[in-house]
Length: 442
Ligand SMILES: Cc1ncc(COP(=O)(O)O)c(C=O)c1O
Image (cartoon, rainbow, N blue to C red; front, top):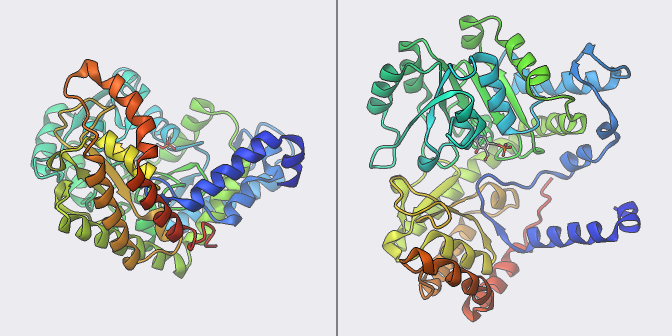
């Protein structure tokens, strides 16, 4: 860091400030995590300097002997860890990984994707109309049942009617176990490809605390920076079942990445993915995954005790979705109040949402990052208590029911909430707890 301090003190100082923030708050956004020092070290290396368009041993540029070894190692580790015959480790992030699958398999404007609606916990790249995945391909969206669970009868009926070429399962805000076998029965019935986007739960799958999609689906995509705790990045994997359905899948995926949608891979990122995969293959990672779920269960139990309404009534994984309507507070108000108290999570829509996306009715939170820091069940009880106290205090700030009054309210609220005495008090207690747990556990 000393070079940066000298050449660019402004950026150096901002990075220091961000490090301090990450240490002093409870990071509870379920898609975030703290990567290890080794992962960050690999990211900040000379591998950043290389261009290596193509794949190991088939590059368009010279000088890739070392990079070939790095990428091959990352591929081999991914294959072993997830038990798949093929892995592409080049996607720059989760969104291009998903796009690459569609580019590989679908005819533009004709091929059809069927994914969970964003409003019900799907991701933008599962064919939402505002995303390129919904604009350049046909797309239909399924929803959840009134109970907040996947409704397989409805999904099956829709799939038979719509005949999508790809069904996407794996979500952004779904707190329950995903039954990949049921999805497979539906996809097989209509001869569709089944793609599991396990971005959120990859670490849980590796740790054995969530069933693996590998026996049931054709293609698996995942980010590497969420529960898997690696650098920002992504992978596309093909299963034995996928190869059986279409032996050309590896070729199609490889060329969808380059020349289809990307140029050169980020070789420093590839190395960091390899490091993270090695970390995830050891026994401590299994313990980590188990603890994420244990912590989340305790958090859910305590929130329920305090009268919070959890979507689907609880959680089986690493995340919780709270519908705040019974508490008389809007999700956006609660999320900012919680930030003022040092608890960082995100506002989120709930199934059958009645509010606009900027002012949704819920919040989403989870335990991957705080579990990396070593927090356990006792801390979860305390955190649930703080969340309850913050929500109680923040009820004073009522989002106007008239749309035209909201932006004025929001301007004032954004300032006042960070001066609220009770929340400042809680933030001091949160900080006291947080700094006891290092952000670099490895
Ligand atoms: C299920 C799922 N897929 C894909 C992505 C996209 O990943 P990225 O933000 O790296 O493009 C996300 C990110 O939140 C996600 O939750």
